[in-house]
Image 1 (cartoon, rainbow, N blue to C red):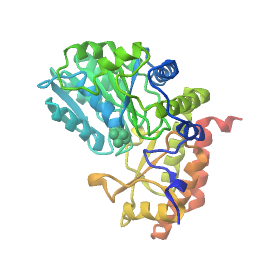
Image 2: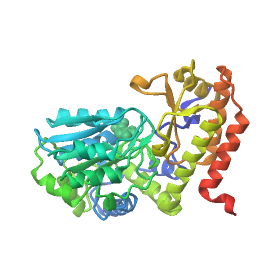
Image 3: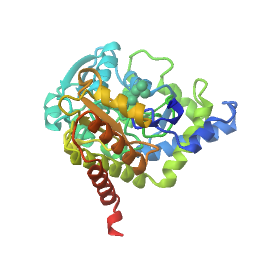
Length: 386
Ligand SMILES: *Cc1c(COP(=O)(O)O)cnc(C)c1O
């Protein structure tokens, strides 16, 4: 029997943990009001600035990614504010729900599942809205938005941007400051190679100006309180000190590899996965031009329930991939290739998935898929030049 500890996680979070992170998690707890924690907080905040590509502080919260998205919303908006939300999947829907829960007047721009939003359409729809809310990498469909163009449209229309980068931050280059993204939320358990439980939020100058007037209720997720405490080397409430140690370990790994290299590795893993999909005669669910580099969504072949495929890959190979969510259940499957993930993990996953597709009656060449994936990976990492 395969126990949970032996499962290779090829889902879009939680992801596999590097040994250094696991080691950090096994160490004792320690006092959070003192120099040790202050030093740790300072290191993590500074390293996160580099990951987010911003000179603004990145605030660290005890919660899963959704808490970070909620914090970004309630700290910048007031009940009654008109906002436009790009809804291209499950996590776009979640932004609609959060904003609605806190009393925003929400207009929804629905995007066909698997497609990216058209920046010109977003620009045309923005009409006196206080903010534009969108998911930079829609994990449920494997789609990357043109966040730079959406932000430019928002800026032109005088709207603030509130952006969910939970599944992509750390795995894809998202130049928060250069693109003018205002309130940006990320999470620990995806590309950042940590267990679930921390959220990260950056706030631009415009976002802080909005925070001065924002009247949506908040207490635990009051970012002004977090910002004030940060100045004293603390967090307002008891932080998950063990996770902060793990965060330092993960950030050291990322900066040690080099951010450009990390992004390139994810892109190469995406290219390898997409090449295998093509070689298997399958169809990407997402628009090729906007296919995510951290998660690949694939249409299940005619007559094959993707839930069955996922189950067989896990039971027979000890590799967990994802099915589709909500209306996509049974219709697509998704492979996460983010965080602590190398080409060998992707190749193993391609092989297992191809074998199980074959067992379900879909004729494929496992060898061709692996060859295509290897070649695409080599090309994307520039190995073929050596
Ligand atoms: C995983 C994810 C979230 C957050 O989910 P949590 O379970 O709260 O961590 C939010 N948005 C996107 C795009 C995600 O992939």
